[in-house]
Image 1: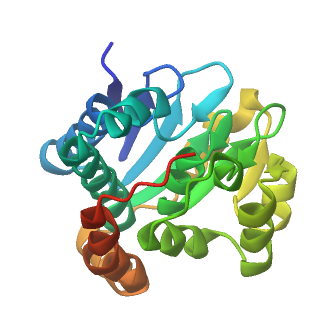
Image 2: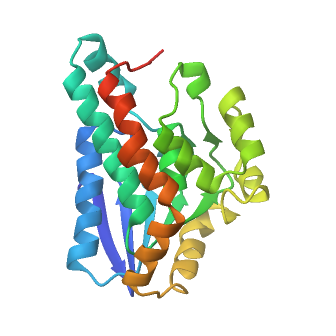
Image 3: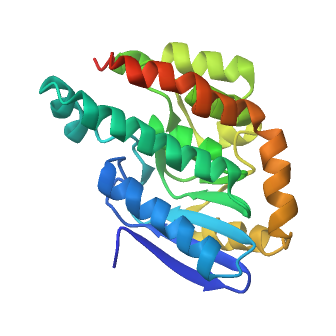
Length: 238
C-alpha cells in the first residue's frame, strides 16, 4: 500500500489517501500529485473520488511537526519549496480535467478543509468529523490562493465566521450551507459518493475548460498573487 492508492470502478477513479492523518509534507504531496498524473495519463477515468483511510480523519492539513522546525532552522528555501508544492496540488485539483469528488471520511481541518474546497463536489461523513479552519488560533494567515479556493465552496458569511472564530462545523451544518453536497453516515458515504460520480460521465476537454473559466480567480491568485508572499520568506507560524 502506497501513500495514495488508485482503484478503477467503471469510469470512476477512486484515490485512497493512506498517510495516517494525511498531513501535507513533501512525500505526501508528491504522492498525491503522482496519483493524479497517473489517473490523467494512464486511465480513461472521467470522474475522481478521493477518500481518506484513517478511521476518523480525512486530512489534518499542513504537517506542522515537519514544517515548523524547517522554518525555525532558517531553511527558507525548503519552506518556499513546500508552499509552491502545496499550491501545485491545490491548483491541480481545481483545474483537473475530470469531475472531482471529496468523500470526506472524517475531520477536515485547516489545509485539509482548504484542499476539500478545491474539489468540485464534497460528501461528508455525518456520524463523526468536523470541518474547521483553526488558523486564527494557530497564528497562520491564509495565502490569496487559499482564500480563493475557500470562497469557491463556502458562502461569505460562513467563511468569515469560520476564519475569525475557528469554529467547528458538523457535516449537517456544512450541508445546510451547501459547503458539502450531502452529509452521510460513514456506512453510506462511499456508496453515495460513487453513485453520484457514476452519473457524471462528462468529456475531459469541456470539463477542464469549464474549470479554467470558473476558477480564474483561483488560478490568478496561485500563479500571481501567492508568489510575492512565498518569496518574502516571512512565514507566520504561531
